[in-house]
Every structure is written in structure tokens, then in C-alpha cells.
Image 1 (tube, helix red, strand yellow):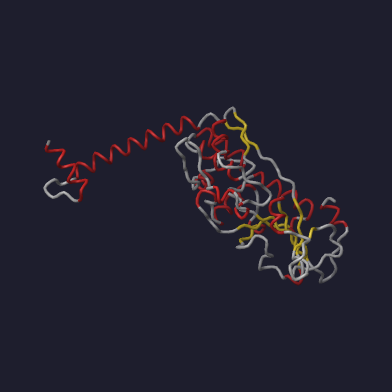
Image 2: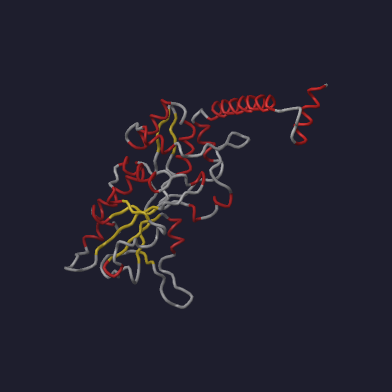
Length: 300
């Protein structure tokens, strides 16, 4: 059943419960693809009923953006401040709403549906908190139950240079930014397609994405434990597997050259500091085994 049809059957009575629709996610990073989902929800539920909920949690390469960072990106994509809520638990009704006067609906992707486990029975025989929403008539307020709607995944692709890149998921988007961040032309293309404009402030936020490479030149956003842990997956999306960001970057024809340049810069820096360090050693009073060995070599 379409969500719009659900609303046709619901008429708010005087002092009756409000409908609150929450679109939760990690949003690392948020972009125009997420805005399309948000707009679709507003078109079906009404502008004043829909909110985006996200946390202030950061966690290395996989979650580099705090709430303020995400707020900047959301604003750039067209989400006003009054639609954005900071939460610690994305599946709990935000504190500003009265549970006894609110019908609470959370919009999630398939992986999060399994975690919320709607329509199940607890060990004590009672119903689980979340139920699948079939019709707004007969729904109960949030102090008794919350309701779940499963959203179809939206694809987001952008063109960088002559290449089409899938940035539907956070891992792919972060890898794409790392591949173009030092190229002014491609950097501008990324920002315009993800946020509608080339804005220096947006670039500064995205530059918080760590630049990590392994021995094969592959981007390393997470370990296997995190990759297989549903807690790290963003609502309305399924993260790609390990190694996929590297393959995406290779398709763009940029990763090899950038890794080579990075390696050369690191080697030059090592040699520079190595020479400076050697000149600083006082062979009249060497400290430690390595300095004594170096001074012995000078004498030979």
C-alpha cells in the first residue's frame, strides 16, 4: 500500500495524536540522494510530519562526521534546521515528542527491519514494540507501539571526468571523495552533483574523511568485524564489501597515479627528516644504541 493512501484514511481529531515520521541514519556523508528520499517522504506524509534523525557519534574512517558536520551537509542539500534532530538512539522516539500523544513511524531499509524485528513476540509472550505499518487507522501511540515502514533503496550515481561512479552508500561516497579531493576539477564536479554547488565549506567538511591506503593502494575504511556488524550499517542502505571502494576508485582511472604520488611524497619526507635527524646527533654524547651505531659508522 502506498504511504499516501495511508494518510487518506487518517483524520486527526481535536487533541488527537500527531503523526511523526523519522528518517534515521548515520549519513556519512549526507547528500542529494538522501534528500530525494526525504522529499518523497514529505510528499506522502506532509512537510511538518517528517524529520531526519542522526547522532553526533564519530568513529574513525567509517564515521568521520559529527552532528555539526552533517548539519552543514544537510543544509547544503536543502534540509532546513527544523527538520533535523540529534539523537543518540536512531530508533527511539526523540525526547521532544510526547509518546502518549504521538503515532511514531520509523522509515528504514531492509537490514534495519531485521534488527527492529517488528511483529515478533518476546520471550514473555508479549508483542514486540515495533509493528509493520499497514494502515494508520487503529494505530496506537508511541508509549505502546512504534511502527515500521520499509523504504526502497535509492541509487545515486555521479559523473567524475568520463566515469560514472555509484555513490549510493557512504563507503563508496567517501572513497570517491578521496580519489578526487586533490584534483580541483573533479573535486568541483563531486560537490556540484552531491550538493548542487561547489562550496569551499562543504569541501572542508568532506576533507575530514581520512586518507588511508593499504599496500595495494586500496582505501581502508573499516575492518572485517565492522563490515559484518549491522550496527554500522546506515538506514535505507547496505554498505558495500571490503575492497569495493578501491575497485570504484580504479574505475575512475585516478587511484594508481595518486597512490604513486603519495608514496613518492612520503619517501621524500622520510629522507628529509632522516637527514635532519642524522645531522642533529651529537656523537660526543650519543643517546641509545642506534645513535652510538651511527657515530661508529661516521668514524670508519
